[in-house]
Image (cartoon, rainbow, N blue to C red; front, side, top):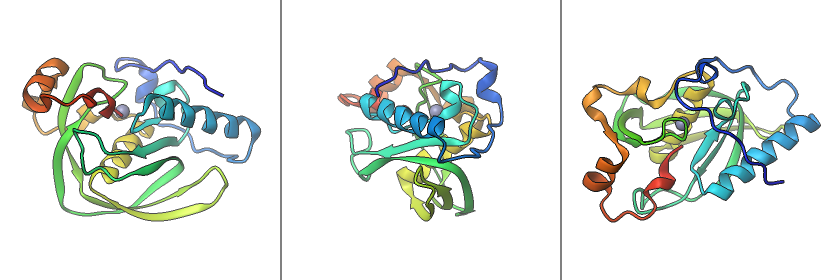
Length: 185
Ligand code: ZN
């Protein structure tokens, strides 16, 4: 079941497309794809990936969360396939924190995100979930959701001064963080 996906990098025009809704969640093709992308994220210990990042222009992403030294308080969340997500509500309050992206290697930036969101999405079982997320998980959700609309985290920054090249970020922000490279999503 482990399939190696090629990740599209910033500059590839497909990353800028608005993805299409998943029409038949239960189809064999889609079920295989959900499982393959899920195992890919688990194998990489990633925090998430959106289908458009592997050149599948469909509205689903994998969301995951686990503590590491960069985000010691990140909650543990089983990697979840989030299909046809909607953001129903967002808090006015925003917070800046560091993000990286598998499609933008070598770059980190401070990204303002709404601290609380209410969302609805479908699971591979076709069950519809309504949930509220805050903090780190709300951040990951918004990052992945943006990919479905052709946006990357650099589109959200306030100033180019909030961008760092990976090794400067490692030196100045992360220091002894062994797991920093796992925080890109
Ligand atoms: Zn990303």
